[in-house]
Image (spheres, rainbow, N blue to C red):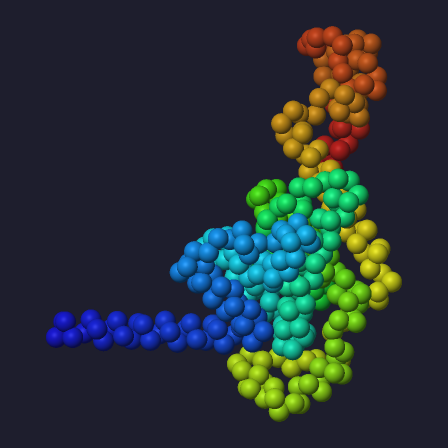
Length: 344
């Protein structure tokens, strides 16, 4: 009897796991589920056949001068390893599901398709501009791959459409929802210096342009999408688990004329935060130093804490010129400090 019970329990446990897995997949909207499956199938191909990755990466020089335009697509679908595909898959499910429920399945599918193309195009364009303007050739020769550029594009849209005003960046600090993708860009680059900064930045720029309507010419209007949903040809899509209808009122976006100010504000915010971060690291490593403490007024405190000679303290500099000796005539705290102590 014992040997018969084990297979029964094992089958029950396996069926329970399969049931939970199917429920979890059903909770993922169709467009997000499709791109996730495509990335996983691509990685399965990598795992089984081990193709040379440098043939599928994004390399601006190869795209522009060797006309290997297929890299625009393959660079987003191929990944560098198990951890790479794992992290991107989790991010795609989390961000993609939230965004698709806001803008609809059809809008999400079109956004992802254009995102794959446009993030690569912006990547190549920025690399070429750096080379043509400043002679900086490194970006033209650099190889990168992964879906994270599109993830950053989706993150820009999702964070701008989110109702919450602030978000936490890894529990380190709070930023506004609109600044969240930009903060992630900088923090991730500090944590993992070898990831593609330009790839992530390209995704943020594409997402920002889409949100501010600069790419509207590439996307069908909400009226067109609502009409497409009535087509019999798309009937199979509407019956998929988790399908999200296109919102009739559309999804809120900013006016195109605000795009330039938004990008400048984002870059300015990032620049300020980098300066603050560098200053903090400098203080942690080297300390503030005597000059940095010049704003601390110790003249009044010097006389109070044992120096009977008022000239022993250089007024306004916060530095005590002589050794501090005990004073038998000490009369207590200065009036200002005594008042503040009593109020506590």
